[in-house]
Image 1 (cartoon, rainbow, N blue to C red):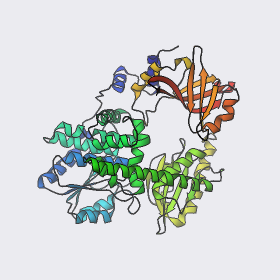
Image 2: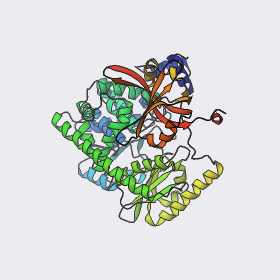
Image 3: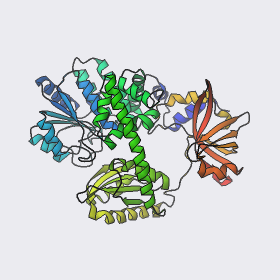
Image 4: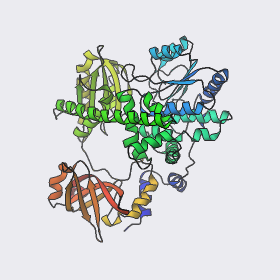
Length: 548
């Protein structure tokens, strides 16, 4: 039987972390992996421009996006630059009436409010026309962004690690990470205390995890320190929101599955400003009010999401290789989540379009592991007024009359992929390594905690129990959709729990057949006693051919 440290090291090696110095850095509570912000293209010129405008007393607008990354990016610069000037305000466009990124109407409003300069966060790198318009009405502009630049880059100072000429060692910063690097550069160029930039790391961690960027390299450093600061309860608003939704501490998992959905709910259901107002507030009454607003938005989001999911599922025939829907009555702010849920249910790429009311359709896409939806859309870019995204999630705006053409084109694309790979949509058990039931111990669970924070590119380790039997099967919950069972080892049994999907495997579990079980290791504390268990991800029948 292997020791916990052996299992930990094998997982590190499998994830490409093989050198002793890299292992020490990866596991360190105080990582040092970070880079000089001035390695980012246009950083020096951007800092010079920003400090010049601050010195002149210029009015500066921070222009963000309505998701959690955009919200936290705005908060980073409002709080950080607020040390140098009180002549700041922010603008976040409406998801419903303006959409993502810069738009000319917003620029007019910002100019009317007396702005002399705009600093974008999490947007703007390819807003060439809008930047030209901003300059034409007398606005100076500095873009900070982290998106791919596959269109004409804005003709202004653009700080983006994904620029083609970038020499920055790490390309995968979130928008809030780029905003933080700008603030870091400002701090190094002024008498700003280092505590000012340290005190925004909690919201940097929030936005980084929420935006599902890889939690490796510099992102891992930012998130580790940010979580420590968040759990030190320096930011009253984040602590009160955490308590209001019954979380014991701030972790990457709690951010991903609880905090971020509440922050995002503001922009989905109402206006993202509410989330900014919460995270930048210090008055407890204001915090309580804004936190309750986010909780209410998130409840509303869940209700509408369930309704829209069922409406869309009713339109799915079940034999599609890609689901392409035109839905007239789907809430625009929920369409992306709904597409993701449908994708999980049918294991096929999903595109949901909704009418904008002016002859256009707004589309949102979610894709399976082996289908790059961005590439498929890009093959037919002529159909879109605008589109963007990445391999697993994308969005677009198109003429309504082109919907049938899009549907046919996407089906042709998937057929072509399937002709090359007949296993394109075949699901397989995913795990990091095989273990024996006796190797799953509290010591191993605590050892694996050193791999946290978990997230994109550093998922919680998955384990396979192969050729095992389920004993003491017990179904739980009002609808019996959870199940608990034991898997015996040589010396003891390991408790296993599967949530929400018990009905899918009930017959298999009760059949007495040998099983392959995958899941991740968790500690459960009950009445002060800590126990280890396997939280099950998937179950399949074991067959000898599985081992061949």
